[in-house]
Length: 400
Ligand SMILES: Nc1nc2c(ncn2[C@@H]2O[C@H](COP(=O)(O)OP(=O)(O)OP(=O)(O)O)[C@@H](O)[C@H]2O)c(=O)[nH]1
Ligand SMILES: [Mg+2]
Image 1 (tube, helix red, strand yellow):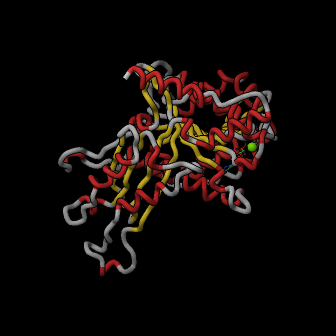
Image 2: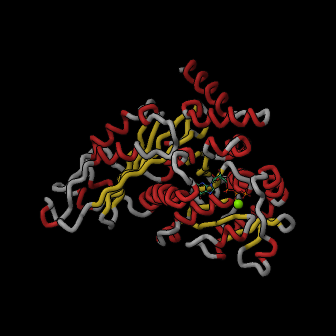
Image 3: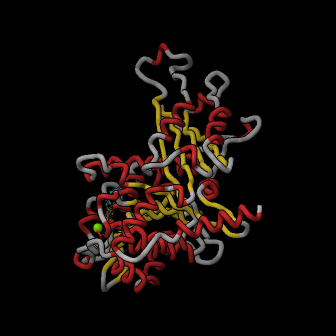
């Protein structure tokens, strides 16, 4: 039962490429890199043409292995979001065929085969911003839950990228179960943000990979635990990043954070057990909060959250035991709704990691408000979720 990992456009492609740096990923997920520019696809390091899908103005979505691919897939959309969307919609059936064929899933309500799809793209450009929401819509129609990983432009990138982002998000929200935000404002202080993209992509990719691999293949055996069993799966990932208002469910907006610590080093003979040093999980958590993928966020204001600890098995033995209940308490203190999804996964690496997802309602994210304002100066639009969610929250609070 493979997951699907689709990257659309330059940025989306780069993020999924980074995610598939670890070969284990190919065992649990099918990668699809969609782009309108062959040159962008050629920069991918881990995804060969068999994983490419070209977007061509007159041929629609075509496989990377097709003869003459370079000829049909060139140019890109140069930040023209509307045109990319129009083309994606025009070839929507063709897009669906390609996705069904790659993932070999049937259609229908149960979404046979694919438990969750990730769709990654930048909101500010053309190809990803325009076609990304269409891809999400096709998956939704197939009955597949969708987790979108979207990149917010930095404020200094200007009105057009902000407008693209607002338009893209307004369409996207109809078709997703979760939204994970990656904010380029975090790089705004750097002299050249572009030179940091790769490292930032790797950070995001690692975080998602930890959660995917941790939940899919490194689960702990709950019977080894007294009390609660810290096992989570991707359903938790969706629950932790969405809100229920009575019968209605709406996705939230989540930021990722990750911190790691080596569990052994060359001095391992002086460390307490089997060469493994003690791990301070609490400081690992606080460090992950300091590295959230969205600027201007307060970790303690999150509505709900999820954490996955990936640790070597020795830390679950009596001698090496890490303090999971204390860690859980810290996470609960960082959730206004008191909802924490807490998971532990076992890894063979000599590395302990904490990966967190903190979920907010849109109004709590000042960067979304900033982008909406910036976009409205460019064109008469605004980010719909900023108002809609508050209505839902108020209604549900009034009912409660
Ligand atoms: N974090 C991150 N941001 C990126 C990366 N590449 C581009 N961006 C940002 O993404 C936006 C542009 O999106 P792209 O992905 O380059 O555009 P596209 O989807 O290929 O669309 P075209 O306009 O058709 O080329 C801008 O806001 C950039 O700052 C990347 O590798 N990492
Ligand atoms: Mg491009």
